[in-house]
Length: 397
Figure 1 (cartoon, one colour):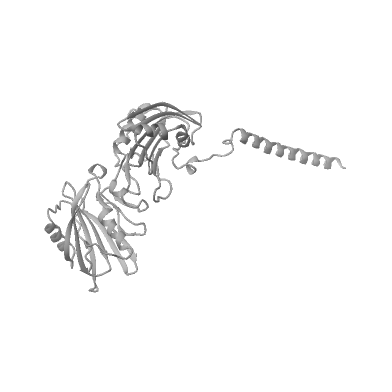
Figure 2 (cartoon, one colour):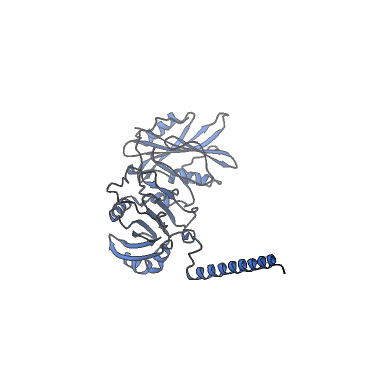
């Protein structure tokens, strides 16, 4: 065998041995520390896990963090609102698709501040008291799932006050220590949770966030009575929510203006339109019927009935109308006044003729859901959640 050939063979043998050594070494290391070779995002495996901040250099504490000024955040399901920090350095993530019985969450993170705000509502949690919730539910096993994105955690304090459990932690991630405050409380069988994470050098920020979130994180009972997978159209400029079936198509308008949805059915196209008008108090059924007869050209009012929601009350007005071809169709408009006299309107127009939509009757799909959306899913937002501008004085075209 030639000298050059022997050298080539020795090099190949050495390279093969080196590769084998690397493979064996990597395997042994992964057995000792499974997290070395992969970067698992445990939030994909545990929907209730709170993510860790992403950076490793702690910012200096800011005595004026400028968190205030933004309107509260309303979950896309319409089920709850929570504190939304001001500033453009925040990301917002609701996780996966919403379905019946699912846990609804929102995670807000600031890579600049190294802050995490994690709120969620978990259905089907039943405990007789907050003490049993603390003892039997908030166990090491529960928190092991909560902190899977962290390398270590230690509970430092636990208190029960005002029917809430407050638990403080020190969390370790990438050699840094963070502070957490987790708050738990029950409303019926719904578990409300807020978890706040801040750098360990800024405990004052933790206290400030706790104050802001606890003052804002609340449910909307009217929305929670409807299907979770119905999305909520939220207009914090005009000041209302319209929770509706997912198959509705928004075809016109947007936040701060009248919005129109088309709903396809076997009997043709159906329309829902929602808007607001300033300084239009309707003090009686007669006033509501008269206002609608003037607003909707060609409408023949059939009758009206009172309707009341938490932040607005008024009337439902049933009517028929003629389209441009002279065909008769059926309609129902919901008219709600807030405490300032603003009028919020949701108008449903469906293809079938000569129906009194105030009367209980069997209707084909999708009409029952359309009625439910405008009568139960159309609500006025609380003053603190909306911008309270003066809406344009729109009339129904």
